[in-house]
Image 1 (cartoon, rainbow, N blue to C red):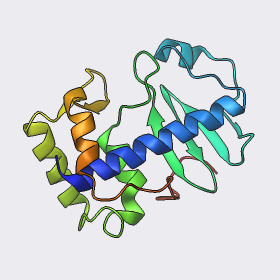
Image 2 (cartoon, rainbow, N blue to C red; image 1 turned 180 degrees about the horizontal axis):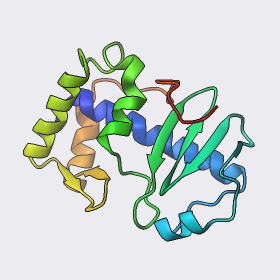
Image 3 (cartoon, helix red, strand yellow; image 1 turned 90 degrees about the vertical axis):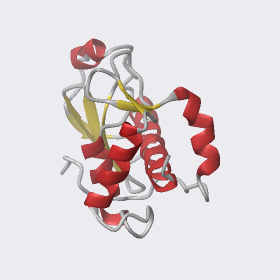
Amino acid sequence: MDTRLVRLIHDYQDAVRCAVEALEATGIPRPKSTTDWIGYDVPGTGELATGGRYFIHGFGCAVKTPEFCVDFDFGEHGEIDGFDFHRMENFARNHLQSKYGFADPTELHLAIKASCDAGEMTDSGYILWHIKPELQGESNQNVDEPSDRPESPTGRCDIG
């Protein structure tokens, strides 16, 4: 798998993990299912206890903090390791070339297509994708340098 794509996926997943931790610190629990998520009786937008804001939408949430901004959906059973390509591209937009080495969105899309065609990713049957479990460890080893904690990649969350 393209090491640039691996780095982007892992950074996106790290940002989602941090967002979920911030939601939990605010008193919004991680759902056990998408049905749980849409049934929660919490304000649709609000302040995070750790600083920043959240905006709940459909099966997911957009979270903007001073450190990062990420928009994601929960998996069918509350999983947080899935990704969709549109949100991942938005996450990386301002750093697509400088941090991830993709010349433009077209090059990113070609890398995604190549990984899908090679069977390195699986479709959840919903809107989320996953790196194949047998490639997770191998993919981590192929990343040249570990990325730092998510930085504010886009500023393009649906939060005021």
